[in-house]
Image (cartoon, rainbow, N blue to C red):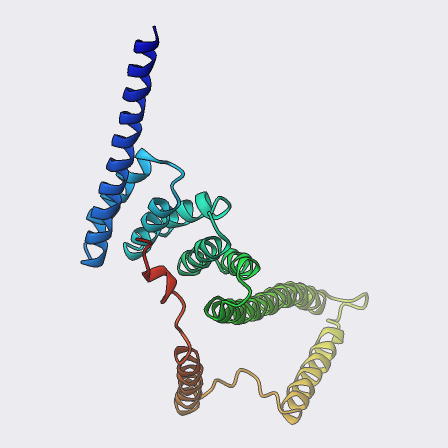
Length: 267
């Protein structure tokens, strides 16, 4: 009986040793392919290593990095989230959250990126690279919120204009109905058999009021239906283009998110 137990323990240990050797072999092959820029092959071997040890930090971490290089950000996010809370040391946790933030950033999820960078700084408050990426993501978030507010304001203004236009059309329809009614009254004979001239007088008053309204509108600097000229449109577009280029130039000078830790693998 004791002999059988010893044989079982030896076989079990041999199996564990074989599993560890397979893990290290696949992990090492993945690293070699990664260093050579062959990221699809790297993902293949990292994935095999993860299958051998699902919670192995290094295998999952490197698999996430290889997925980032393939721009498969959803899978990269899945890997980093899987291991961030089980990292063996604070520095490892910091790197996992840092790369998670980069993956979210490149996936255009700024809120999630900001949250990940903050977690990375909690694990390692001295990481200036993460601090910079956090500041940059927050800056872009502010710009995004500002743009969304402007878009919403423009949409509200557009809705108000459409509403006013609808009201104006309704008023025009009502005026037209009133005008038709006046014409009918003008053509109908009165009690003495003569046509009334009240409609004609009302028409003259309406026309005079309309002319005065148009004149007042022009005097207030609001000429009716005056389009901008082609030259004015050209100058506006050129000014907007220069401003956009200057803003983009300022942003590009500091656009370094994604470099650094996401390019480093754990050997």
